[in-house]
Amino acid sequence: MQTEISFLADDGVQLPGVLTVPDDRTEPGPALVMIYEAFGMNDEMRRVARDLAAEGYAVLIPDLFARGRVKGLCVARAMRTVVRGRGQELDDIEAGRRWLAARPEVDADRIGTIGFCLGGSFALLLAGSGRYKVSAPFYNLPLPVPRSCPVVASYGGRDRTTRGFGERLQARLEELGVPHDVRTYPEAGHSFFSRPPGLLGRLTKYTPMHAEYHAPSAEDAHRRIVAFFREHLDGTDSID
Image (cartoon, rainbow, N blue to C red; front, side, top):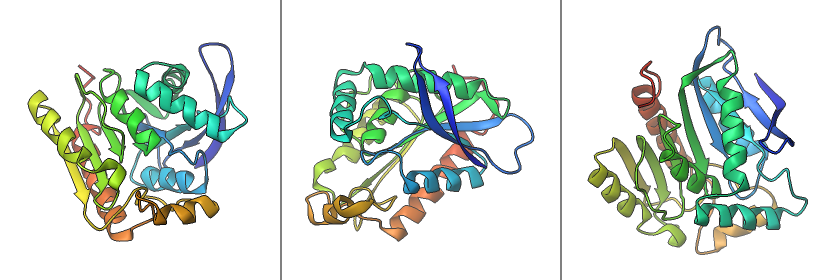
C-alpha cells in the first residue's frame, strides 16, 4: 500500500513524503529510508518503492525538495549539504527516519537506506551515521568513508561522471573490513535503475552520464540489493 504522508521536521515544519508498506505486513518488519535522485519525487521513484515493498520492505521517501519552489535551487542546496556532510536535508532525513521507526509496521532496529544519484550520495553519508543497518547507494559522489555499515553499491560503466568510484569505494570498504557488494555494470550509464522523466530525462542519455534505463543491469542490481538486504537487514540483531 502506497500513501502520501507528512512528518514533523526538527524546526516544526510538516514535510511531505511517500510511505509504501508491504500488503501482507502484519507485524513490525524491516524498512528503508529512500532518497530520490535529482529529478525529485516522481512516478519512477514511487515505482521503485513499490518494487521494494513487494520484497518485504516498508519504504519512506521523504520529499527533501518540499521546502523550496525552484527545483534547481533545491538540488544545489542538497549538493552543498552532501559536500559539507551537514545541513537541512540531513536533518530532515533524520526526522523522517525517526517518524518511520515509530510506525507500528516497522522494526526500529531494522532500518536501512537506499538512494540514487544525489540520493546515492546521501545514502553513503548515512552509512556512517550509526543509525542504519545497511546502505545501498547508486551512482553517488566519491565521499570520505570514515566508518560504514554494510554497503551494496551500484554504478554504470558508461557514466563518465562516476568513473572509478566503485573501485575506490570497494577498496575503502575492504580497508574498513565492512561487508560489501560493489558492482559496476559496463553496459549501463547513470540512472540505469530508473527511467529519467521528461524532456531533460530523455536528453541526459546524450551527455557524458549516458543516463538511461538499462533493464538487464537494473534487474541484476535489484536482485543483488534484495539478497544483501536479506543477509544484513532482515535479521533481528540491533545496530551496534
